[in-house]
Image (tube, rainbow, N blue to C red; front, side, top):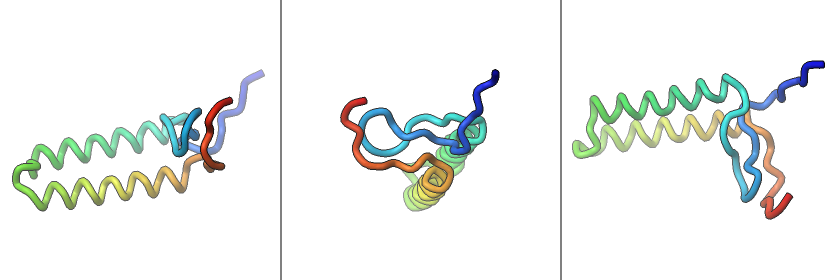
Length: 82
């Protein structure tokens, strides 16, 4: 019998609060796109040039967090032990 995969893309962390690594390919794709966009920002708007990199990094990070909140497992609070 094949085990059914969860509907969420990011699982909650085992200890602490928040999300851990992706559990589905969609989550890995989102993470790869995030890191790819940061690479492109570094390549075409180097951090030493200032505002362009900071704006892109902030935008990409906000989008990543929004997707993780939307498609991630719901955290129920701090997890100290299991």
